[in-house]
Image (cartoon, rainbow, N blue to C red; front, side, top):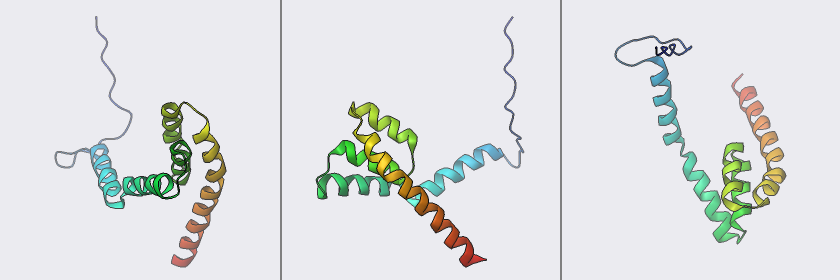
Length: 112
């Protein structure tokens, strides 16, 4: 006898033909396309590697740190077969994290 898989734990509200979960996914993809996150990543890779003549492994680590993306860092270290992405990530990540916090606080205080 085959057991049935239980339904997902999230709440679905069917308004129209689209669930809330699907609408969230669509909105996230639209906002990412509008913000151009991939363009910023490609620009930082191009500037670091081509214009500043940095090794590509180091540039990948810097780009991952700027975007605070540990999953991208794992991929960068996997394809580079070295610790260079980890070293550059470790140097830049704390600065970027603090900068994001400070900028967020500035935006909140200006709106309030």
